[in-house]
Length: 406
Image (cartoon, rainbow, N blue to C red):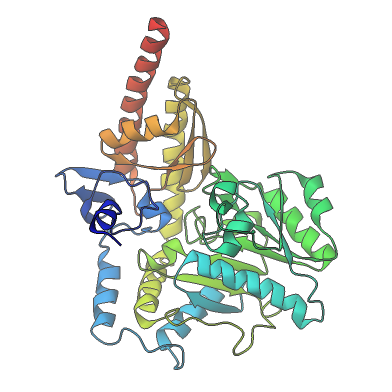
């Protein structure tokens, strides 16, 4: 390669449209940029830093573990992993857990678990999963096929076979998609990347009934909406239903790379020794962080407080939407997984918020996501809403001036 070519191409592969903002450190619900400004973080690393930044319990757990043992591989027992698995099982529908390094890997494990279930019972032809428009399940070849978004699929060769996508909320199309090769139904109880679209509780219950009727498995992707984000440990709990398989990641490690695939004993019957593996998955460092996150989230009153803060935030946001119909259309979501559906381009709205030191993240359907740390309090809600209100005032005034000039 010539010197000119190597200098023209950046050392970090340019797969991200990064903001021209570098973060120096974080503290609680705030991030400090190298520009000397303090930002209110309502994106949480895309729902990852659920306990905020530099949480003392997480820091202590990580430092303590780092001084003892980082990695041994899954050739050996990992006691902290066994403890975390027990706690997840005790607080969920599941009987067993496989630990991964990321959400995409948790999804891959879940897809394999669903397929293996049917093969284990003598039906290898049942390998297809029904998925939904607007979904996002990861960036591996299998998970981009499951998500069905052409902008992620195009250019990577033939899409991985085994996924039948139907429109979001189209019950008749869903029923028609189930056939003799169907292994299960895969859905996010609340779509994140798709535009903060919760699945109504009655629909989740209907999916459970449909799976039971056809002898197929129900697979929930709670990578973004799980781990307290909606005000309960898992989003599907609001509907009073349980899946057979569930993927987790993001908040489960509080910022340390960690994912998990949870399953019932029935669903995981085919996942025997040698059927799946991971070199780093479930390593001692990740397990220390996962247990520290569980310590905080399982404390009495933690999730109740998330619900209270969410109720207050939603109420304030609805008032802002009513005052600024030129800018916003509606508030969406559940818990502290909320979205503002915009009437003007979401990029303009996000930029106006960022200029006032509030960080948000965009989603599909022209939605700006609000994903504050779960430790956020009423004072942070007030600060964020004051910024959103002021930004909306400015955006609305600009829109009116532009219309008048036109």
